[in-house]
Image 1 (cartoon, rainbow, N blue to C red):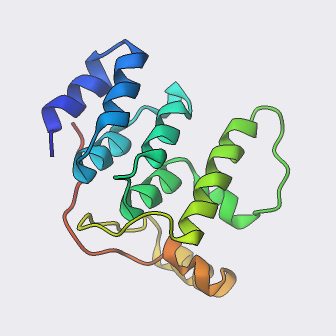
Image 2: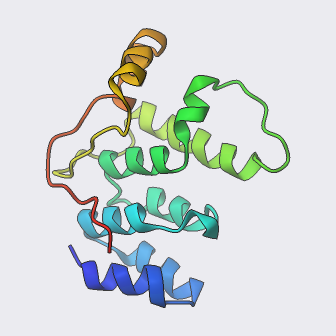
Length: 148
C-alpha cells in the first residue's frame, strides 16, 4: 500500500488528469482502497467512478465507496426519484449498487466493517433482501481505512 503516493494525489496534486491517471493505472487493491477512503467527495463522482471501474477495485472498496457516497439513503428507497441536484449522486450510487448486487467486484484481503449501528443492522436484516445482505455483512481482512 503506497500511502505517500495516495497522500500526494489526494492533498497536493491539483491536476485532475494526473489523479485520474493514477487511479486508472493503480494495480494494487490496497492503494486503490486507500485512495477511495481518503477521497474528497466535494470533487464529484468522476474519480469514484474510475475507482469502481478499475479491475482491482475489490468488494470491500466498492462497499466503502457505497457508504461514503451515502448509499444507505439509496437503500432506504431504491425507487426514489432524484431531483436535479441529486441526479449525479443517484446515477453513481445506483450503478454501484447494481454492480455490488451482481458480484462484479472480486474479493480481497481488505477489511470492510459496515459503518452502521446494531439497530441499523437489525433494520437492514429485516428490510433488505438476502442478496442485499452484502451491505451489512463485515468482510475480514487488512484494515486499509487509514487517514493520510
